[in-house]
Image (cartoon, rainbow, N blue to C red; front, side):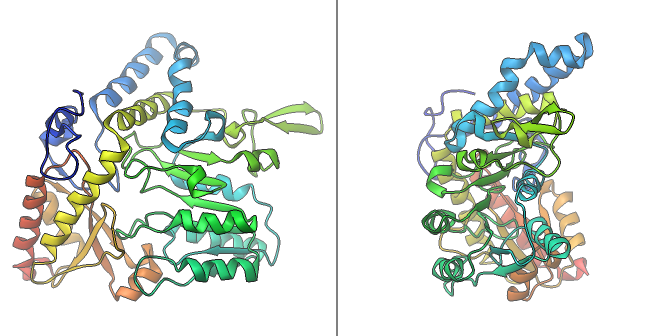
Length: 414
């Protein structure tokens, strides 16, 4: 990757050398990848680091390879800490954002009558986890109302519920998977700190797209994946655990020999760090790849990424809004780089297959992914397109042109 101040671009600040970044991204040669909210394209250094570690495992053995690469493995924690403004000891590796989320939930000793206060825009797996807790422990799930202006949850209404209901947990998804909405997580966190409430934030779609600082958010737990806008490998994610949670002794329901010490036949002691939320076995090549991906994002610059990526999405959103038969579905004053829309006369799978045929990577969302949001919008499905900083304006225009072409022939999609 060349110096990232070496080129000027028509969108955003002149801080990204997009041709160099694309040269570092082999997938750009074969597809228009607008599915970064699903899985970002690996950069060459990430791919190389993972292959090199797998080669080392093949030559010397798995245990021996991880010992030899202990510094690179340890950099995962340091790199994520640098990314979100924490200490390395506050970071736990996880297999996904959902894996991290459920580990955090499992550490909270819920009792019948406890309240989880959340939003109407939390991720599907989070909502299902809450329902599972209600079924097993008799907790109550309270959804704060959305603000009438479409900016996400009504923070004042949510704060009033905090004071009235004293929830055991407050939970919010920063950027929901089903739209470009950006929720005011730091404002929610301010009220949680003021009222001394535990706060869990799902940052799955925002890490790697926006600057994230856990102190500014005021969260006790934060979860994310590495495969999306951070451009790491699949099967990787992380959990941030605050110092106050660690000091209070919270631990996952199922803790193993890595996260605890067996101190006697009938006793054990959790380790002092967020490692108590980890298991003994790791996919070490993926851990190293995630560390390299995080360092890569930091080198590119999260601030310029946070300007260019949503601006590319804005360009796409504006063009889609001009196409007859296309309805753009995103909400909020400054949407993220998740562009959602539906197309009159088309069914979801045929539309995606037509996009695939044009070598445009995309994703579908269905009503079951976002029961509240899609009910409000009166839709059963949406196409999601999610550009990233290595995509180009020409690609945006080509994708919008493909959608316009398909929208003009709806009979093909029945």
